Image (cartoon, rainbow, N blue to C red; front, side, top):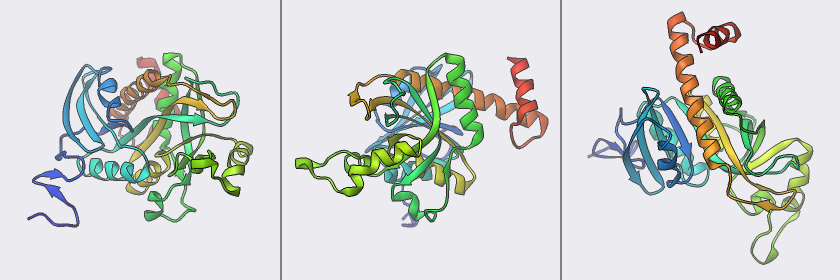
Length: 278
């Protein structure tokens, strides 16, 4: 009989259906299970490990190094479960690969948004830390995502994201039969004035949990909507996946370089050495 404190099905973690060593250190986190095999097509080798509820897990190789992807479903509650069980299985670096709605007029559909930090308009992270605790990307993952976007020549923006629990009123939309209240009516204008770039539903919880556990996390999302211009189109998914996979390759190279030099972190002169090798 397994303990209720950490439920398992045999040796596998209860929700994800994975066992220790089933996943790589480096894990991409799309929300949609259907996005996992699309991401895995960009690898050199890939196979499905498990699929239970919203959690679909694939592992493989990219540039000869291990990589994994795990869908999280929608929202921070299920994303927190994914990070918890992936960390227990040995993962320590996470990149959310998702879709988002921009709230600044200059951001185009199909652009990418790399989240340097996130506003915690969700409840899952409140079970980990008080609201004053910041939700921020690990700087190595952030730099790798920027480097990847530059090298691939895609349009991108870097800034602060708002993570919400609710897709409708929580992101300033009207509810059923036009329902709204004062907060939802003013939300977009308030966040735009604070230079918030976008809405999505997972990043802040992933960031808080990763930070508390000493893990690394970042986020790159394709812009499907611009709320200011009232535009929507499913576009940019492949660019987000390409940037995330390239960022993992970069982080893996940095980790090897740090190990060679006996350094715990990447820094400018070490980056110079990395660039000279490339």
